[in-house]
Image (cartoon, rainbow over all chains, first blue to last red; front, side, top):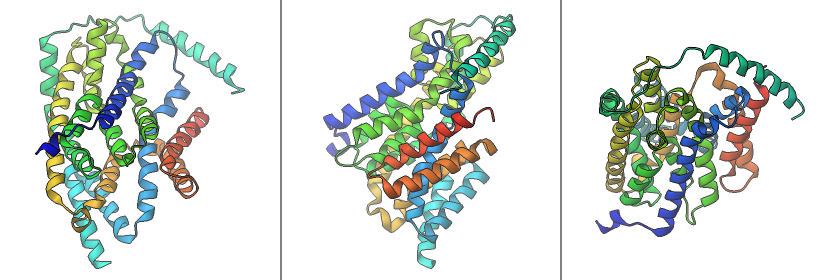
Length: 104
Length: 254
């Protein structure tokens, strides 16, 4: 129980630094807008960042796995696309990887 | 760099066109309980979906050794799902602080653009109200707020109300997720070691914007695979994202 309430000072420090940085990104645009003009070109570059970073994480992670992981990733994607339900997609993916590892 | 002059020129002509079309004044924006209520109620069904990600985040946070209190603190103060999941993915002992902060900043830079899009309405609010509401801004409630404000409701407190809905579910489901993670035990037996990859597949499915995503994603994938081979640690993530962003900046206007 006491474990769940642990607050390591360094961890808290990192979390608060993340929070401050994120808050600056949230208010930064509104604040800067009266001062600078963001070009469409720069805007296009920034808007691809979230997807690109997700892919940059996912690619090497899946490359380290084998056919069972690739099949499970495909299953997760299919369920997510069909249902739009993240929990369902995750359950399918995790159940899938267990099944595929047993078979493949 | 060399064509900066040309870019500025085209920007200026665009800016002039914009000021011409701004002759129509936006409706008066108010900030009150009615807006908070509308935002909260409109967002509730979507906030339940946010709870799905919160549970996933809680499980992952528990796996890397964060306590329930630490994970809840992160959800309550950062309030940005994708960046939190990425931070937890990067979490290690010792904590790679610089890498985590850089990744969080890069992933959340888009919020600056989203916040800037609220300017026509939020410029009419006091700084405390505008910036306070923006603290609770996430992808889901931003989209709903834009839709509401664009239909001339003038409800300046909509983002605050919808942010409260998202925040409550996000923090609550994070705590549930850490409890679920603690109850699971050895991850590999139940395929839980795959949950992170599955979360990112689901995130990717939601972030896919059609054909315009194709080139940046291929660039990010190829760069990350190469960088993972030749660079130490987790640098491949930031390198992959950055190169995709730079390529998009160069490619723009093609």
